[in-house]
Image (tube, rainbow, N blue to C red; front, side, top):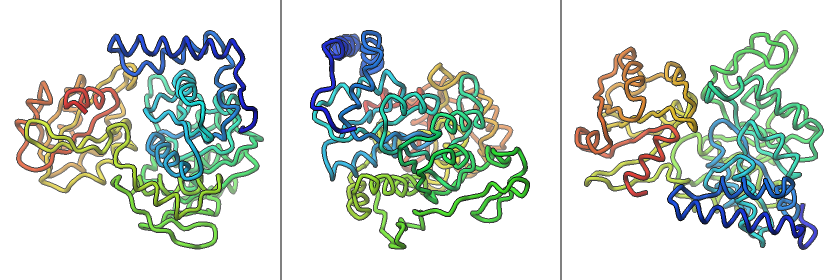
Length: 412
């Protein structure tokens, strides 16, 4: 929390310096931003460094399966109305990346921190946050991530009795279960498009009833809480019933939901909804997501989708047929090496779109599209796929490392 002028011991200062040096070497070698290796070196020298760096900050942690990078960016923009902000804006969301980000700003008042779902409880212990935003939980990286119910249980245990204000999505039963162990929860009706991971009651295992937007368990009484904040069309409803318009440059319903949650978080820090939402309009793209780039004389819109829930949301915001679509899937360590999740995605939503398939696992995706009765072409490279696409803006949807490959290829 904001307080002491300089919480860093000589050892901590040495760790910060060594981390920055390691990051600089990594960048010079062309191995990326260097934030992760810099953070690892710094934490090796001072294992308590993250806590020391957070000591002078009012922190908000943001965690979810989908939308945490964008929501982190929106919250950071909103809180800049109240003072300087430090944030891990590029998405390095494990302790090493978070440590490196906080080490880079000594004058910040607020820390807006995206946190990988598996590390939330640990980072919350280290940073003593004022607020924690919980957006959603769904299946992701099945080869290395815990099953969603286990993640919800870990959150619930790790956040039990937390002093932080928990801003949580009341439409996701797993998030509600996780947040319910905390004494101070602000519920936001942010919606839940993907429901396939939330049909059984996380409290007792019974079948959830889901009439309309409501949900409840007949067996144990676990049910959707009454929200204080809500997304209603193009507006955010605050606890007083006032409706504030959402004007975003980011597309889609999911980003309006992210804005609603961000407005609720900003209010915890004293930033009014009108001010917060106006500032969010400044965000045009997030780490390359939603960017429209020129490549080979064509407009390409770059869209990131890492798991079934993310693909479902992305399909809802692409241009209608016959807009051409390029799909790219890898299965490297950062993606998760198990591609069985492809079978959970409803690719019939792409009917009418000319489709080209690229990426390391393009053949896995091709089999899935064939079963879904889609017409597509398998291509070796992005260049080849673009040449085969008919006229119109091309929607390019890729999972994590495939997205990074695309950004490098188009010079974004």
